[in-house]
Image (cartoon, rainbow, N blue to C red):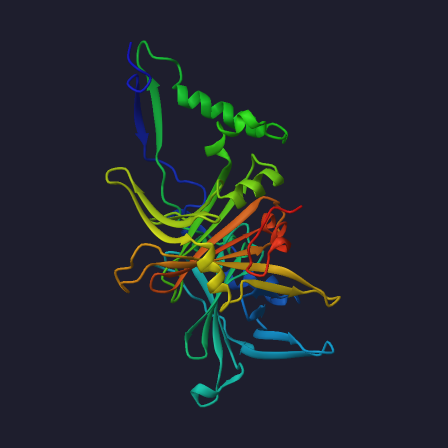
Length: 400
């Protein structure tokens, strides 16, 4: 009798497209709203988007202004505000065609910002790049100063996803139809196991028993990861992960112990982040195997030294005047030596609270602002639960 691996043959189907993949017919026949019209509700509303960095806070009131500011409290509760407008009015709303872009974006030009003393008091200006992301809430993904007093702001929004030209280009996946050979089981053993696991996931949520933890180690999350290459950024990867098997307490304990790791990215490079251990960048190929690059490794002593010169904790000022931790930053150094700099790679991991309708959603992105110096952003409601445990060095612990 042939083995289960030998007793199956497959035929490949090349017809059809995958969800989210753009077809020529769909693009040609589209008669719906223009991208500008799809974004119009965002420009008309009064709410704004915010992003908190280690020092600056960025405020984008869509189609109205972009503000960069920093607030400091002095003795006597007096608040000093340092602020710059990176764009104060929409000066250009182009009818652009996103041809040839790895990730299509809709640009909006903003001008008439605060005068720039480094450019003979010319006003600051920005290009706001709107990108389709079906689970986004119009958040600011990144802000970069591409040249002196000229900026690029990346906004993730679900509104553009209704336009076929602005959806992510999904790589085609070809169906394989399997048939059993004489003497073989009706279904491969691995397929039966997978179907059982899928049925378990449809059942009502329950606490996972300890004896089940090992068998479900590889099936704790399903993910959607999307590569983004926009403007001056070399590479930026956005991923949203939904964790379905773990309770909050179990997830937090395993995450902080480094035994549960987050993964992000598709395309050539993928990323693995294990808290308190390492950040890896890797590529898997069927022929040549796995190529892995160590982006950074954890050293508590090196991080503490780094935190003395950098902000390890960022606070959010509530309306009642109290502060709460909004983000912590951790330094991972001593990565593999970079060919371009002859120095070890290093990465700053930013763990940020992000409210979401899905309590276990995790958004991951990676930036490379300088050669072989990275920023890994990890944002989740799960992180909201542990940020208040951060000590003076930004180190986290299991909530009591």
